[in-house]
Length: 187
Ligand SMILES: [Zn+2]
Image (cartoon, rainbow, N blue to C red; front, side):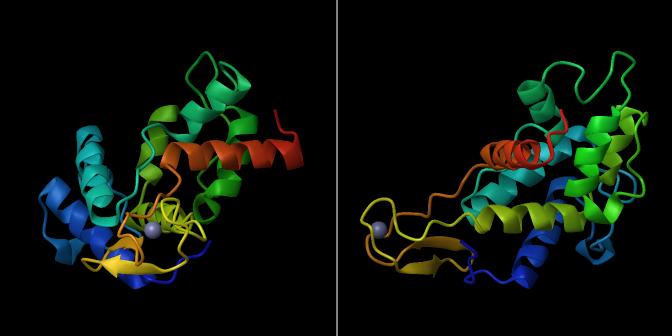
């Protein structure tokens, strides 16, 4: 369900902080639309660091694998990236739906190396928000419907104190892809 304990603005602040600490840059230079790799100089390993910080801050599990990885797993090898390392038309269609704001950049035949450039501060914040919005109605431990904030960004049960069990990033991507496939029959 859509949670309302952690405000979107707070998510954005924490994402900027995690990025600043993860890449070791001045937070003042980080904008919502900044591309982590292109504008902020992030390298692949920095993403692990940033994800880890966000997991600690919000009690969530960020996706370990990309949407591309999940498409290949669900719909078969070369369903997303062809033998030449280019994005397939079907994968471009799916990514276009997922990354609405960047769909102008996403096209069939683009090199897979270009894809990480599209990860922005805003897209990470959206990812965190979507995970927080998997908050269950009731506590899985005691059944209470009484979520409360712990340490400003961690949602826990006001009854038994158990941290909220959010859907993991990888499970959320998989669920989303299955829904898309069900309704649009792309693959
Ligand atoms: Zn509880």
